[in-house]
Length: 106
Figure 1: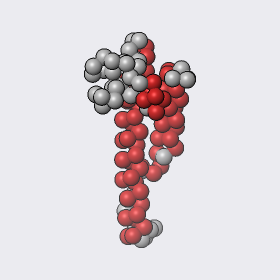
Figure 2 (figure 1 turned 90 degrees about the vertical axis):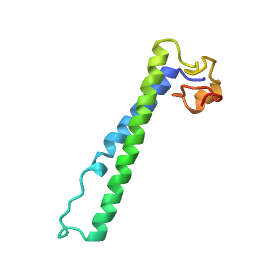
Figure 3 (figure 1 turned 120 degrees about the horizontal axis):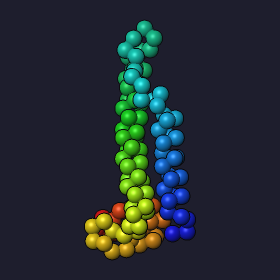
Figure 4 (figure 1 turned 135 degrees about the vertical axis):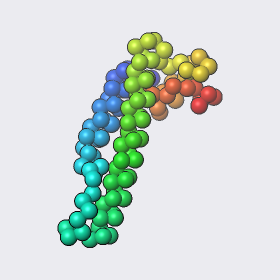
């Protein structure tokens, strides 16, 4: 891996946290007052809200994967498969720095 794994993971985590904070308003409850917006606009807003919430769930899961990878870095276990104990291919770690398993175990 060309870059320090810790720095790369921290950068990815910061990016995801910033994105989550930037989209907080998209996850706010949709007003049910049909006087201010029409029914179709409200349905569209509710769909946007649902998609924003789903995206935030995925970001949260990715942040947890990154935090687990940071813990493996701290414990000296980073780069080793959590299933079989074999080394994870460096190219796999370049693509997904939070990868916990080798290609065979994934």
